[in-house]
Amino acid sequence: MRFRTTRCAALVLLLFGCTQAPARPRTSPVTVEELLSGTALGQSQPAQALVEEAEILAVSPEMVRFLNRYVGRGAGSFIKLHQLLYAIITEGSFGLEYDDRTRTAAETFAERRGNCLSFSNMFVAMARDVGLNVSYQEVDIPPDWSFDSDVYVLNRHVNVHVELGITGEHVVDFNIEDFRASYDRRVIPDSRAFAHFYNNMGTEHMLAGDHATALAYFRKALFDSDRSFSPAWTNLGTLYRRHGLTSHAEAAYRQALTADRDDEVAVSSLAALYRSSGETELADAYLKKVINHRKQNPYYRYHLAREAFFSRDYATAISNLRYAVRKKPNEDLFCFLLGMAYLQRGDKAAARRWLTRAEEVAATDALKRNYSSKMDVLLSASH
Image (cartoon, rainbow, N blue to C red):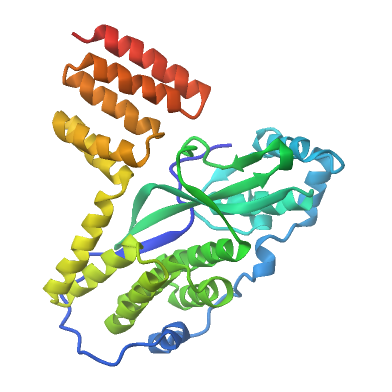
């Protein structure tokens, strides 16, 4: 199974680089009903049929045959889980390859390709078919941005939670190299996962220039699945903004903030919209919110600390890292870099304390051995 840098769920777009727009006339607020109708976009019907909810987790006959071959349906949950995982990840029997597309469970199985949400769809469908108790799970990974055309794409993450009763629980993540036990995560209902799916489909079609299908999928994310799903509101706003409908875009971004007041992309989008419209004071106010929000994010402070560390500004690195470890004391990345910063400052005692802490909280034995060997080499080589 081969993977590269992931683009998972949910995809959220931040439009940038727009030309200066004229100041927006103050009109009556755009209603939620107007936003969801899409009438102002004047879009025709989608050229292709949309994926319905029942299709997302549908199990194909080929999937059933695969399960019958590799999984003992009469076995206990723990055995069935490990049989299914072994069958999927063993190159000879299955083989998966990562790409950027969002697919249904059956499509992912047939093509052996997809993104993290695609693989989660496939695993949830197959696991439930053999009687396992599984749910989707949102994971608060550090902000992961990629660039596509005239937008930045924020990649968010979903994996699978398996409840094994008295045996405990298990997390199935198809990008396990990047998954860390220290990340905050929460089980979500299928309706929320389907909102992720439809939002991704809408985003992919918008980036491809198929705005009619994009609109239809954003509507499904909000109408059929989860009206409180802020990424779909934000992306709907970006679709309106691409058509020059700034009042509609503003209303959609604000609706995203009604659903989630901490949605940084919606706040950033409003700041950019006001800036392009010449409303500097409003833009600055929203930009300040973005900056304040980021400063409270321990992973953003870790990002600042890395920049300071590689610039040899160890005092700034330590300051940011001490904030980060107060917020998330069990994140080994923070502890390790803090130890390295103290080492560069010549404080061996503090360096050893934090490097030892990194080893203690590391999620796996492999990581623990890695930290232990690094600590021995670094501390013995320092003067």
